[in-house]
Length: 201
Image 1: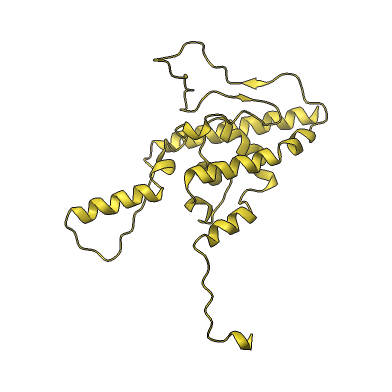
Image 2 (image 1 turned 180 degrees about the vertical axis):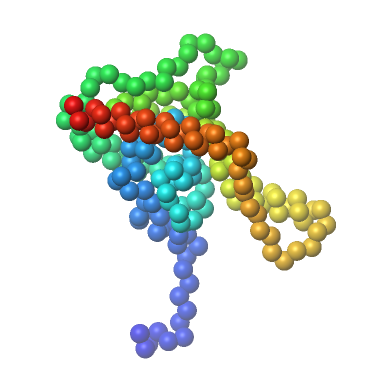
């Protein structure tokens, strides 16, 4: 490396993004849970929290891009998940969608997500998932962690006449959201318990 002395290497702005795309933060052990949560209306960032992703790089990606990468990751392994069960049962666990609609809009489930079918292998339709409000964080990690929102906050602070060098923006959850987190954890536990019981048969 003697000939490269004095040459500075500058990592591209999307360096963390490239690292994430090359090694998705979820593992094979998380696939079923991630698919289940996504099908019930949970946002990608909350899915990462439930799956124990503790490094910040994936959380910093734009929401739409993060959702797209998560769907690609799950769809790429869908056949693999189905093949794990040699004789899947004909019955399906469904969150039935009521026939009535309000003001021409699709009815939403009680937790805020569209009601989708969840099969034994964890697969489900991902249509319109990017339009839903997360059933766990209620959109806090969907909208309020985006760069556009942070820029708006900075503009409001600057317009107020305050002088500052650095601005730190922290996002916290209201205590009431812990009820939704416990509900999701309970739902996952019941699903896993049922899956284990079925595989033992």
